[in-house]
Amino acid sequence: MSVLFDRIALIGIGLIGSSLAHDIRRLGLTKEIVVATRSADTLKRAEELGLGDRYTTSSADAVRDADLIIVSVPVGASESVAKEIAINLKPGAVVTDVGSTKASVIAQMQPHMPDNVHFIPGHPLAGTEKSGPDAGFPGLFEGRWCIFTPVSGTDETALKRLRGFWEALGSKVDEMDAEHHDKVLAIVSHLPHIIAYNIVGTADDLETVTESEVIKYSASGFRDFTRLAASDPTMWRDVCLHNRDAILEMLARFSEDLAYLQRAIRWGEGDKIFELFTRTRAIRRSIVQAGQDVDAPDFGRPHPLDKK
Amino acid sequence: MSVLFDRIALIGIGLIGSSLAHDIRRLGLTKEIVVATRSADTLKRAEELGLGDRYTTSSADAVRDADLIIVSVPVGASESVAKEIAINLKPGAVVTDVGSTKASVIAQMQPHMPDNVHFIPGHPLAGTEKSGPDAGFPGLFEGRWCIFTPVSGTDETALKRLRGFWEALGSKVDEMDAEHHDKVLAIVSHLPHIIAYNIVGTADDLETVTESEVIKYSASGFRDFTRLAASDPTMWRDVCLHNRDAILEMLARFSEDLAYLQRAIRWGEGDKIFELFTRTRAIRRSIVQAGQDVDAPDFGRPHPLDKK
Image 1 (cartoon, rainbow over the protein chains, first blue to last red):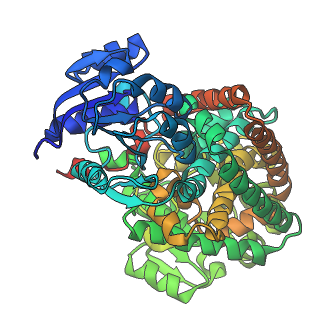
Image 2: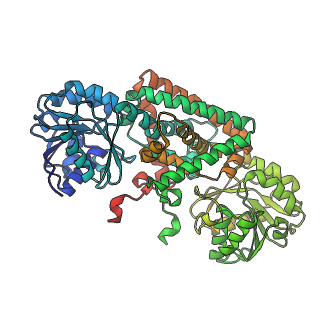
Image 3: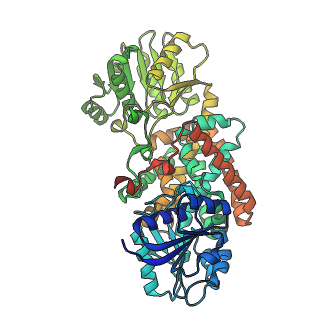
């Protein structure tokens, strides 16, 4: 692979930032990786892991002479990062982010971006429930989608360069407007996380069933939800606060549908229940066919006999 | 392993019945496996798979001279099976089931059981989202819990024999009363399935986001729910109808908690959101520590680079 940007600054070095670092190095996409994070402890850990070539707690310093700047912080911190880095950005630099909400990130960052840099909001749909610099690994973005939500008037050449970067990581790139992105993500990502957090909270609060029972018997369904509900609390708090309208709309629909199902359960309307439970099966099939999940039963979780 | 029951009749040969067949044979727990299912097609498939020694569409025939009868049918079919087999049950035989709801199964089966057989309701907490005789596999029960909900006056020797059977399959056996079982399962299993079915239904009904977008971007959270929502519709319709009260209670609590969270999102109360999202993380940790789920990120789903 060839060098695509001479110097890349990674602002934020959590799961996404550190995975980017692994891949940029592995694929030789730059000559120098500069790692910046506000937390001295996290920076130290990033250095121990050898994620960059230079390390700083100042994002303003990090972006000096960088050709590509990737902001990978909780979306609520986007504006303060934009303000900090703005003055030191190199003319012609490409600035992108990886935030899960796009309209809010644009509103926070765009006003601070100098006219002579290319700000292209992006969102790689990749991750795990783990967080921090130790959570990153090479290949996280391989085969995954990365969505760009360019603002009007974005330079085509800059767009093409950034697309080339994500494609080098193995991602497939899509483009859509920020509002549509936020609606799509509200249903495919934000609502599932919120529901997962909520159900785990409900279980935690029961008096009639003990917490140890919930844990002991969790393999019968509950444990699936605990994975999403173990995701980074700061990141997800910010998502809730920064994609509020789309999330509230999806929550309203979800609750409406749940009330319908609840009523069917109360009144013993087996046919209504059966209809829903059959329809949903087809969607799983489509997801597996589209290569978006494994076909192996139980997500391919290992079974005891596998080891024998 | 030694023979524990001379003849075992499996009534129903779906995911659970066929997994039992694999293990009983593999471990040599009986001299003869009799497979019964009402559907001629399913029976034919079971025979092709070599799951039993004898095959019949009549459960009444199947139980003749059987020492252990395991009923593995959707819980709504329990009473009709009990009625059918009652007259042919061998004195001293052990009759058990694998149903996900216990108070209802007891109410359906117990009245039909002759005094000279040992009816011991049971529930192995094991399975995958797949169904039918092809879905079974050896080792499904290894390391999993099996809950007995014995009725009062149950013969201790019979209980011990049945416990020995499940332990031979690698299961750990617990005992509790049926009402408590139904409450526990309502939260750890039934509510998660219902919520999963519901959210997949909500996504399927959107107008602003296309189904192909939902599928394409499902790896960002949604796909986790589609696994549970691909479970057998008949089985789960019956669970909803036969554990109604406990399920409605859990649904009410879930909805109440969701309304609280929704309000926090609407009013931008980040601290309330953060508190919940932090608390739930600890539960995931406990589940992993208890060996009830894998620690590997993303359920250990394979990543593209694994293959390279």
